[in-house]
Length: 260
Image (cartoon, rainbow, N blue to C red):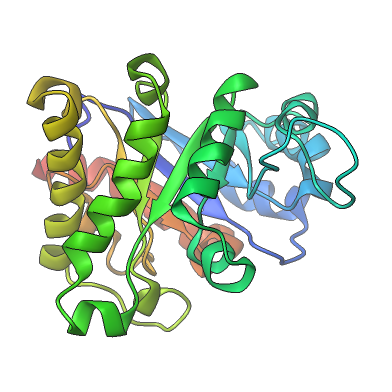
């Protein structure tokens, strides 16, 4: 993590879980966020209208994020939610290409890139997820796969849009399993993502892009992971449902920053 060059982001992904946001933010009240860091709560669409207000009620500085966006701008697409709608509901970030979307809904690299474009068209910052399965890792395909996933985004976005894009490495084998990549494994892949950006542009550009780790980061391993130079925050799943654990991860930002 290098807070002098790029923003540190701690993003909670509530997935399809019902969370009492008032109690959640009450549990976070009084938590000081490290300078240069940002907390984002990525909630189900039905929560977006009031997440920001509930956070402010308890003095918590938190941005609002969505968990998905339609690749279409508007029209006869029953059940879809457009980027314009998300922005109107108060979102400023949006997850795209989460492994659960890729796995359960067949989202391709090309579709994820389209969704990232819809985010930018509506003033949303996409958090683009990339990652490999256990089988792909064991077959030695990790870096080839990651390169293809990142390349699809780089080829679709302008440089200006890339400046307002966040990547998140989430090894599929470490999501919701209780397993986590070692800090060395996480750093290696986050570094590979940064190198792919540098190859497309240059090292100076790559050093400005925030890259998060999204594989079961929790209150126990956050400091070790966030201390790595290429890991700029976390996309937090299960631990983001518990305000005490989520608060501990946010406190870890300051500790890790001191270790950089």
